[in-house]
Image 1 (cartoon, one colour):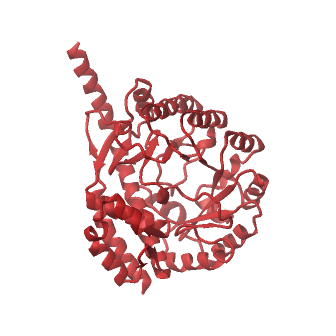
Image 2: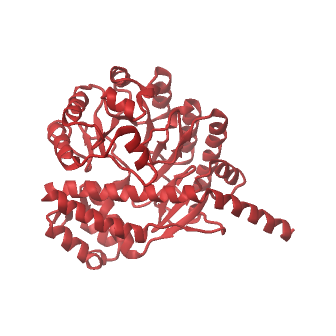
Image 3: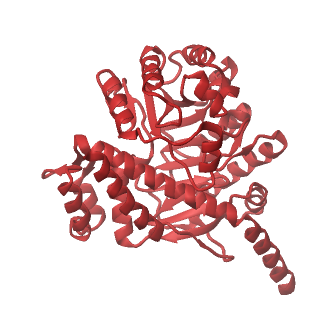
Length: 434
């Protein structure tokens, strides 16, 4: 019953996102740092380099080459300066990828630079199991990282091989590397996946038992398989046909983890109540720096160029890295807030009504009524909250939302040739103006 209701909601969301999450590409300058929003609490830094490219991954990533990565890190520092000089005062820094730790010293320098420009409280960094060396761990600890997130995905050697992740270690090597982290960081998160092709209930159960046995890990994020048009054929070729056990496996995950690792979002579970969770649910706005990074500021979605060479060139010349945007309507912004805030399980009525001048409930009454009718949310005088059945509904909705971002990434990659042509035309215009 819950599954088909959730998929219906997901189908509706797919159509809504297809209409609202399209990017406008233009040769005219686009500068997120010039946005009047200055309250953004989150700075996201994207490092797209990876030692190996996983077939299921839909993020912007390229094969690591130090000759490309070194100037890239320098450009990221310059883009950070654009936001600092514009008056932004970020409190949280999240460095994702890709694999941010491909150049550990450059990463530590980048974090130090960000700390010198912003009053940072929380610093989160992603990495892979094979990078959990003593040198890297001490660099990150000294840099002030307080949430380290390790991409594990599964502890099953067969799945790791088919996923193209055996390069990062076998089951025994990954476990040893994680336990070697100890208590260096207040939050040690591991990213895990479910509903994978070939992932039986027995494999998932063993993964869950392994998570619970790790003494160093105090947070686990379990994501459903998410694909795009471009990645789905690779997933099927490498891993086999996709499965339809998402709801049952999500139920198994909750049943295993919640007694000792209460959920802090729909798919994040933490044994430490002070652990730092995903940034999405806790900031109204965020800025993204780096090639392929998205920013959401003042109701506008911006995308930086996905061309790494163009990114480095534009930023080093003092230009904005953003090359596309979408201005959300007020209703689209309200729907986005409803989705993202309830990802964190609860939405405060007073804060959301204050943000929209008392128009929130009135404007999206249809959505609230529909979600209440299927038993996904409940409300009282203070807040909207997800129900037990609503947790899985939100897994489906977030999966569709993130899949829509995957589509945006594919769209941006398709514009790389057009972006190069635009650069040529702009140079010609400048030459004629001289």
